[in-house]
Image 1 (cartoon, rainbow, N blue to C red):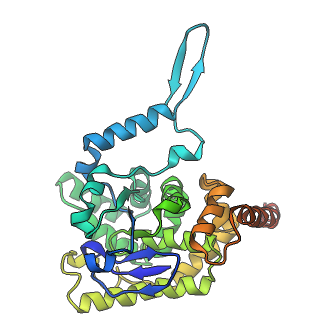
Image 2: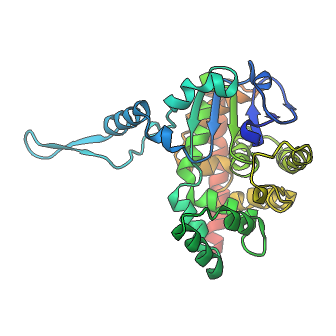
Length: 331
């Protein structure tokens, strides 16, 4: 795995199969040249991207043609528009607008994908877990057409109010489909290497990268170490005035914190709740074949698609038995 700098002063992960390194921010076209063919943006898709005719046309085509047609009676049919259970339906679609502008934005042509890990249902869930006083302040900001970001960011960073562990738990529990959509991109060998970023590159990006690394059987200690380094890089970037484009409330010590205990607790919670990252992603919609493809694409020691499928299946089966046993014991 690679960890590098960031576009728009946001720390990012850059996955590449043939080496490991971390580059100092900020990200420039020189850093990116020959380093990425795909950009995965985990922030909310810009309005101009949503309204772009090529994007809306692509979405309509994807929605309608992936629907299921049921015949009821002779010459009568209707299209079921609810999401299909087929993995392809929850596949990220490239943003035609950002892809066309990628040369100017990133210094080279690449495919750009938006996968929002904080959709409305997740944002509302976060709001619902805040103290009533903070909920009221957020609603007042919304009524005044002001951003509640300073209030929410401080609340998420404060362990006495919410804390990052609870925030990441909400992502795992309520953003399973977007997380699956993000991780599924790594199963496509043509997408590698992939540049992943959000705002800081440690929260949403960190959860996606944690899942990816665990699928590839990376030692949890190495995952914790890289997560902790995110804070060190953000502090260094702030001291070097490289975060000046971010508002002040997003560069406080509390907000850029990345404690080892947080990511350790998250991995432990995921193991206790679902059995592990592979089991979680299967529950979220990924297939054994896709998990095996991720391992083939990003592990130098992979044994080929067929062997990796057997490995993943065996891991799922072994974990399923022990996990269900613990479940029954608790019940």
